[in-house]
Length: 150
Ligand SMILES: [Cu+2]
Image 1: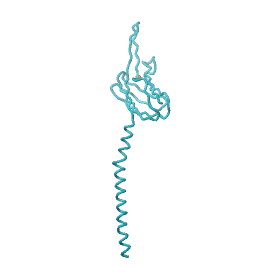
Image 2: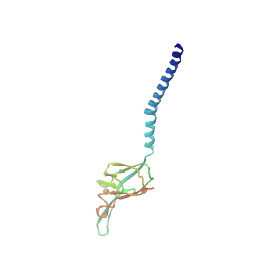
Image 3: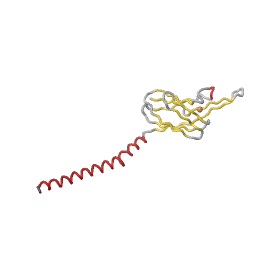
Image 4: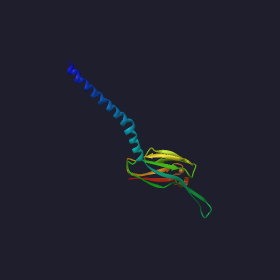
């Protein structure tokens, strides 16, 4: 009987040690290790593209004022599947409600404010960023930028 008790003691101690070390490892890597590292890595992979709203204006020879609002730059390039953060600063124009054609992305750029648009395209193509208020020449446009996804 005493022989069995002596063998069981160290075995239980060993098991207890294994459980304790495993629990500590799970706690350490699970909370302070892998999670922040994973989100830090994801954060680093997001590329930032910056845009502003601008305005062209001129006076024609017959004295007529003409103007057009613009997204600047007017063309941006994104890789298929790439995570991008598009930030648009409103400079000219009070506000620009926009959509990105072929997606459900929409928003508003207001003067003096920066609007952030997270982007990730699964399909290649040319997507148009359209200001719904200034979409063509009759409405102080065309305020259209092209997002080229390759
Ligand atoms: Cu606009």
